[in-house]
Length: 413
Image 1 (cartoon, one colour):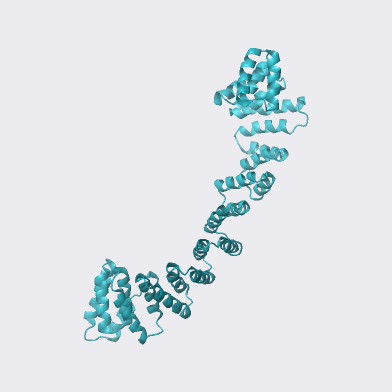
Image 2 (cartoon, helix red, strand yellow):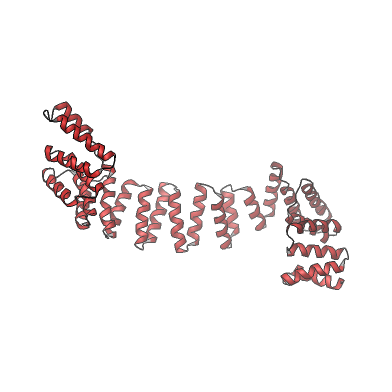
């Protein structure tokens, strides 16, 4: 109703300037001010009484409209107010304001059929989006959802507003027409531009339908609109669910994703050459020694000959630089330590690094396997057997490397 609030200031000015009520203008003016004051303090019943008397005294329709609106706020005198408005309409049949106020009055009186008739009348007389919006209410709350859908569709066609589209799509979903709601939302997204509210609605609908591809495309569009790590994580989760990490790589490259994320995907998909280029760039630009360790990992992983002495020397140089700059992540300590052991580069140092890794993760089976292998290479067979036994009891021998180590260590004992 606030959309159609009528100000009496123009009316008051005309009264004062043109002498509409030369003998009693002061009294009328004071009553207007009093009525407006009561409205201001939300005393709607006394305000209604004042404007009702002013209408009876002057016949000015604006006073009756004020009376009617105050009746709505006061939740009183509905039948009487409706009767007075219908009488005024006979004098001014083209006054749309009467129709606008009759709709909520009939609704508050639970006379939805009458409210619907007034709504149809308003739709015939006006193409104002506010009137179309108002006219939808009797059908929404009166149970005629098909007609309400038609009106809200008309409203959206006029305004192209996201808020109106969301109301329409919610109603369609309520009526079991989710596919139609999705089509409308997708069309708006493609033709009218991006909006987070549209994406939120689409995610909810695709999730309800368990439409993985729809979810993926929506998350991708949302990420392009406003990059956020949680959205990117959902995209990667879906790609992983679809077993399509190569497409994940293509997407990450297309949106200039965070370098760390892109690097991890390169490694997972064994794009080691791309990973190497990225790690070299990060090592130059960052003080984080992690990238030096990663260069050590990639030097080994990209080598065709894992026993090449020059390659192993270069790998060790990267790791030594990383250690000197403070790398102490157990993942790197175990990786480098195991390589030193397995390639007989420096078994004792390898064992020391793995022990340090185990201080961070004491029950990590892979680290314990590395330690056992180090003890084996040092010919400390009892230690190797006891350590490896813990691994086998926990993991079994299904992993070929564990099975190989277990056989060798048992023979050593």
